[in-house]
Image (cartoon, rainbow, N blue to C red; front, side, top):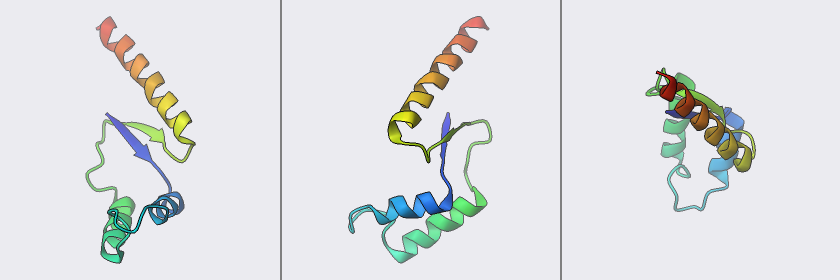
Length: 77
C-alpha cells in the first residue's frame, strides 16, 4: 500500500487548481482536508511513503520501482 505524502502548501495549491465543482474547493471541505492532513487520521501505518510533491512522472516511477521491489521481496519468501 502506498501513501502519497505532500506538504500542506502543495496540497492547498493543488486543491486551488481544481475546477470549482470538484471536491475540496468548498471552505468546509478544505477545513476537513487540512484537519485530516495535520492529524494524519486513517493513514496506514505500514504503507510505503511516496513523496508526492515531485512531478507526477517521478511519483509514478517511484511507485513502479517500489512495486517491483515489493514483488521481488515477496517472491523470496
